[in-house]
Length: 334
Ligand code: HEM
Image (tube, rainbow, N blue to C red; front, side):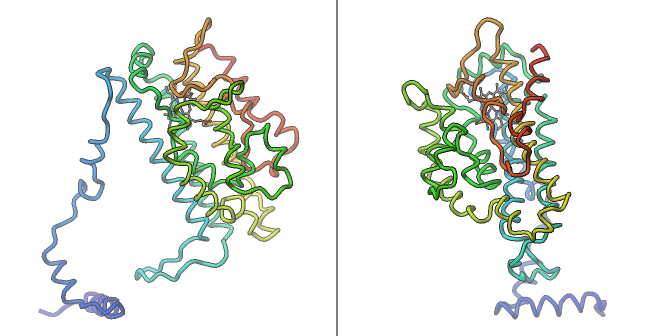
């Protein structure tokens, strides 16, 4: 049988590919002959995925709570994936699989495209958060949450990683402690001690940390500190600063970063806050959160004033951070 020229060409290319690595094409062709066809279920690991929901109670709505947290974690994973690519200037893989290595300079269009992707992930999360706000019966939620103590979304390590990979550590320091570090050469460890979410889960009067925070620190602090050190010069802000002065002023670049700041630090926190207000808020007395924070004072973006890119906002915009959205949320009765 005559082999078609396209087939012969590919076999030649494969032969070269394997020879380069000291491998034999014959053995790989044997492997191809013996291997099964790929199936959807093997590729997506769907059966395993559907085994990963283990409710702690028999309340049907608990499944919604678990699945939606998992969906969110997957979007966080994608966001971190894009950030990692930016951190490494984008990878240049040729069609034949040959890796041309890391580019030594970040390309502006690549930066914008990847930040835009992250914005899309967060916008999708913000839009779908009504699954949490309106999609569960309050009575069921208030019951099964008692079986989840002291776990809280507060303990999402990927959420913290998204923050760390987005900006300099200084911008994550609690707003009341920032002055202490202003213009000083502080270590990542020193600033990490004052990271905003630790303050949020610490009793101001006694300095006592919540159990939720202590468990989180024990499991993740060393990983988070290592990540922050690794990304000190390659977080999104550092990469932005590595662009030429002209590219830094490009509208698309500025828009993408400002959008990210609003998506991660205002819009998502607000829809999330809305869910806390819907389930835990009460005209007379608020229900304590599973993570033990003073959530009404802690969660609203206006109080946290967490801003990844303060240099891209005016003084007034910073002063009024999240205010417009908070008022919009407050105006609606839960
Ligand atoms: C009905 C739904 C939800 C309610 C009532 C709720 C409530 C809360 C509360 C009260 C806090 C403050 C910490 C504490 O004391 O526990 C918190 C923090 C947090 N939750 Fe949720 N949450 C909900 C859904 C989610 C979902 C789906 C996620 C996705 C992963 C999530 C992620 C987070 C994160 C990342 C924090 C920390 C926020 C920060 O430090 O600013 N939450 N949540």
